[in-house]
Image 1 (cartoon, rainbow, N blue to C red):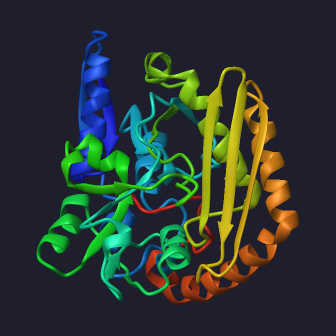
Image 2: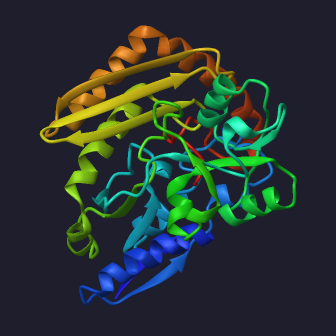
Length: 324
């Protein structure tokens, strides 16, 4: 029997059960082990002020290394670009919708000064560019918790990943999905990552669930993020697509207040995703992303120092966003 490690949220359990069903269809017996992460426990502060590496993955990876579980199912945008020694991404299954979505009303229809919730600096920066009049507030919690806050009138709207809503069967409450040229998605948004020990019991079995046509563009995005040294403290977006034998990658870096946007799109061979990711990151850095990164990391270190006594390692962690 293979033991699947997962966070305990409704969306995380949907994802774990989805992979469980796919493995059991291949005759593999499985069970799910719920593991609570730092990101689940600390819910009273915006993510960019919490600090720590792998807020939603660290404890799960420790369980993998201790061999208490055989595989972990992650929202891939939560998984650091640098994995602990001995762990690998055994599979990246078919991707869901990459885009961001808004619940509560279309962005153009929201009243002046409407209250919009999100904890993602990437989304905050882009919303400020599109609608500087909005009152953007931090919102944490599971997807259903956030939706209920809109229903109760605490927020006029919330912005979150379309993939999470679609997976939970809530397509009908999406007021609008944003084109990537309007709101650049998070790195690996909509993709799942199945992490295992490099030589563990789950690797060979899980690798059969890998979709190369998803892995290739996702690896281009993750390589770009790694080259930028980006994490959830910095508004970084990426959107990669495949067309025939070509891969297109757009990368974007925003100042937190949305006043500066550095965006670049390049094309490369689909067989060389890492090369394309590095080239896009290099151009972004040359065009001024380095100054934004340096400024935001200096600010994040101040927050990390304040939180370090309770949250441990305060180094930037390579994530692009909040869950969903």
